[in-house]
Structure formats: structure tokens, C-alpha cells
Amino acid sequence: MKYSGIRLILGDQLNIQHSWFSEINKDWLYVLMEVKPESEYVQHHIQKIVGIFQAMRSFERSLADLGHHTRYFKISDTDNKQSFKLNLASLIKETGAERIAYLEPDEYRLDRKLKDDLATLDVGIEMCSSEHFFTERMELRGMFEGKKQFLMENFYRKMRKKHHVLMDNDKPVTGKWNYDHDNRKKLPKDHEPPNPFLVHHDVTALLEEIKGAGINYIGNINPKDFIWPKNRTEALEGLAYFVQDLLFNFGRYQDALSNEFWSIYHSRISFAMNLKLIGPKEVVNIVESTWRELSDIESIAQVEGFIRQILGWREYMRGIYWAKMPEYASLNYFDSKRKLPSWFWTGNTKMNCLSKAIGQSLDYAYAHHIQRLMITGNFALLAGVHPDEVDQWYLGIYIDAFDWVEITNTRGMSQFADGGIVGSKPYVSSAAYIHKMGNHCKTCHYKHKEKVGKDACPFNSLYWNFIDQHREKLEKNPRMTMMYRIWDKYNAETKSELLTKASQVIEDIEKL
Ligand code: FAD
Ligand code: DLZ
Image (cartoon, rainbow, N blue to C red; front, side, top):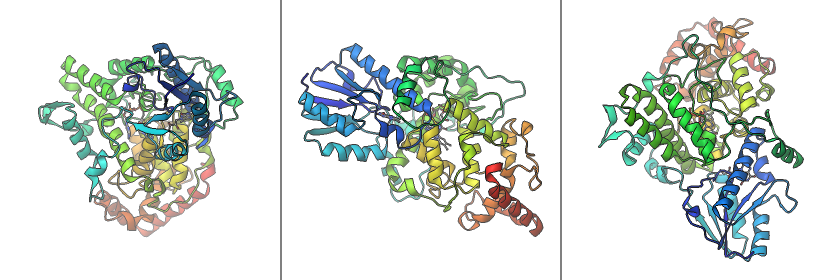
């Protein structure tokens, strides 16, 4: 059939509410493609590939059911040239299309690639807004001008005002902007959070197609019971479950760690949001209106804590990404050089917190924020692992991982490789923090209170080694002063024992 134009939809642009789809226009052919290079730019978790392809296929069916004209390239199709450019070139020939429109990619890599690739096709090109975020790509950059650091909290308050979220006129509702301070509890003994919201899909056939295409992957999957949403309806069900059963403990336990529960009170909506099955504006609206309807003033700390993650952190990270790419992707403030230990791909370590965080990441392609920041990220930073290694691991393993939000969180917030653009100090801790926030240490082979003995928790010596090693870069940071004061009070013998122990830990890193 002949079309005057082709509209390309990427795998993380499945926004059925986009204005593109508001009316049926038979001049446009909507195109989605499963292509090998997008699955292989990093070694992905199999659940991430399955989850994206499942949602893409479902999205194309929804568009066709609405009456739009579509073309879908499956990974196994023999006429699939496994390239956006080559598939589009064939379609231009086949349909006579004279223009291609696409939605702004969220990743710098793909943004550049599509610009370059499409420029070689002899048609008109148009890039349109994805109509998903609160902010425009470059909005934060303007606020940055002349500043080394632009604090998330300042950005968040601007967003609250601009979008009238949790505001009474120009004042924050209840008079306070941020309730983070009230929100740092571990789970009480015998406390059981509700079960995570799960859908159940049989993806056996899709998995076989992916294997047949020879795509390399990591991680585990139960193809008879795949738990990630495939469309907007399922994503909205997950959100409704969160609002009803989890939100009112969200902030309180958002930093908790647990041996038993893998998502605690977290929403698990990042995958659906990053694919754009649901949008941040509707999530924030639903949460705020539920809170206002219930008039439950006590729960403001939970509600504000959750909204801050989406209106604050998520938009802020995207703003930093577009303000600082491409340089951001190669920052390495501490000049770290090591490789990740091989047990990051198996979870086979005697360190219980790491074994649990990595094990569940392999099983579910998911870990909650504190596991990513204070367990795996903390360890990688203390062990001096190169940020490229750390980025690749996070980008591959998590179902919600896309460069714009992964790299700013990993290289920025977690590894401080940006020297303090995102964070005001490195997120590092000894075992004391991990013990304080959960029950991992209770059942661990290592002793959280010991620093240098055979069974001392490796986090302890690595922590002090980090403090010692990076003195020049950190001691003037006001938020690190206290740690240097403590370190300086240790006598020479204690210091030497700690540093020797840290060297042993690094030497034996594969056997920890
Ligand atoms: P909840 O705890 O329920 O939070 C609700 C929502 O808030 C999330 O769905 C997410 O959209 C948003 N949010 C919360 N924290 C952040 C944050 N720091 N940055 C951006 N959005 C946030 N998030 C991703 O979406 N993709 C990633 O690739 C990613 N990589 C990360 C890597 C590291 C090292 C760290 C420390 C954090 C990373 N995050 C990433 C942020 C955060 O950990 C996840 O968004 C969150 O764990 C997703 O689970 P959830 O939906 O249950 O979140
Ligand atoms: C992550 C991913 C994967 C695994 N596969 C595809 C694909 O085959 N086709 C596609 O259009 N998109 C895929 N994606 C998502 C893209 O990489 C995504 O659009 C970019 O990461 C931009 O954020």
C-alpha cells in the first residue's frame, strides 16, 4: 500500500495517549521494529528484552485495533534487516513515503544515530515531542547556567510550583516541602508488606524467538509466568494496587532492606513509566488526588516522598542527562580502574546483602533503590570499580534501565564519578548502615561489627580505605568532614590494620 509518511515508534515510546494516535489518518504508516543492535548494545537481562518486545507487540495490536495502519518487524521475521535505517529504506521503497516522523529518543546514543541514519534517506524528516515528561529536554540546562551544582531540592520546588503539585496557592500543602527526614525506618520485626502486584503471562514462544535470533542475554526467566505488564491496562492496575495497598507506607520504609521481601512498599512502576505505558503526570495526579480525597493529613510524608521521586528525581535526572551528555558518559572522578567481580553475574558471594540484591536482580530484573545505591553501588564504589563496568551492569540487568536515567543514577548518584554534579557527597557506607536498615547482617557469614578479622564484613575496611585513599578529593567537602575527623582519631596501628585488610579484600575479591 502507498503512504505519504512513516511514523517510527521506538520500544520505549509506547504512549497510546500521544496526540499522534488521537485520530485515524490513513496517510501514515506506524512502524515498530525489534532489531538486534538495540538488544545487544549491552548484554541485557532476558526479562528486559522479553518485557520490551511483549509490550511493543501488544502496542502494535492496540494501534491496529483502533484502525491505524501499522507495520511490525518481529526479531524472527526473514525480511527484518535488523536495522532501523535499512528497514525504513525498504519501507520507503515499498510505500512511496516522502517523509519520516519520529518521537524524540530518550537516549543520546539513539538520538545521534537516528539523526545520522535518517539524513541518508532521501525523505523529509521530523522529530516530535514524546509528550511524556513534565520538563523539556533542555529545561534544566538553563537553570544550570554558571553553576557547578544544581541541587535536586531546588529543582523539585520549582517543579512543584510550576505544575501546582501538593501546593496551596504558592505554599507547600501542610507548610513543609520535604518529609525525607521522617522516612528512614527499617521494617519492624515480623512486619509483612503486602505481596507485590504481579501479572502472569506465558512468553514461551517469544522467548524461543529471541533465543532463535541468537541474542546474548543474562538473568533468569520463568516463561510460563512472566510478571511484567504488557500494556497500559496492566500498568494502571499495578498503579492502583500501589496507591491502595502500598503508598501509605512508601516513604516510611523506602530505605528498608530485607532478606524476605524483594520490593517491600515500592511501586515497581518504573518499567511501565519508562516505556511510557503510563505517564508521570497521571501518576502524580492520581497519588495527589487520592491523598486529597482521603483528607488523611498524616500520610503527607508518604505521599510527598513518592511524588518527589517522580516529579523531582526522575525529571531532574533526565535534565542532568541532556545538560551534560555526551561528556557525562566518560566521567571518572576517582580514576577507578577495577573490574566487577564475576559474582555480580551469579550472586554467589558470602556477603548476604550482595547475594540477595544480585540474586533478586537476576531473578526479577529488579532491585529497589537502596539495594542499587547502598548495596551493589556502594560496594562497586568502595572497591574502585571503573564506572564503565558499573554502568554496563546496571544498564543490562534492570528492566527499567535506559541510559538517560541509568547513567545519571549510576555514574552520578551512586559512583560520584561526576565529582558532585548530582550528589553533594559520595553514597558510601560501612556495614553499620546496612545493619541499621535491615536484617541482612543477622544471617550473614561476615560479622558486621568486625573490621579486620578473618570474618570481618568487607564493607568496613573498604570504607576506611576509600576515605583514606580519596582524602585529597573529599576532605574539603563539608559533608565529609566528620568522617575525616573520625579517621584521624584512629591510631597508626589501627589505620594500618584497616588498610592492610582492605588490600586483602581487594586481592580476594572473587572469593568474598
Ligand atoms: P519506587 O521506589 O516505587 O519509586 C517510584 C518511582 O520514582 C520510580 O518508578 C521511578 O520512576 C522514580 N524514581 C525513584 N528514584 C529515582 C531516581 N533516583 N531517579 C529517577 N527516577 C526515580 N531508575 C530507572 O527508572 N531506571 C534505571 O536504570 C535506574 N538505575 C538506577 C541505578 C542506580 C545505581 C540507582 C541508585 C538508582 C537507579 N534508578 C533507576 C532509580 C531507582 O532506583 C528506580 O527508579 C527504582 O528503584 C524503580 O523501582 P520502583 O518503580 O519500585 O520505584
Ligand atoms: C532496549 C530495547 C531493546 C532491547 N530492543 C529494542 C528494539 O528491538 N526495538 C526498539 O525500537 N527499541 C528497543 N529497545 C529500546 C531502545 O533501545 C530505546 O528506544 C532506546 O533505549 C531509547 O531510550
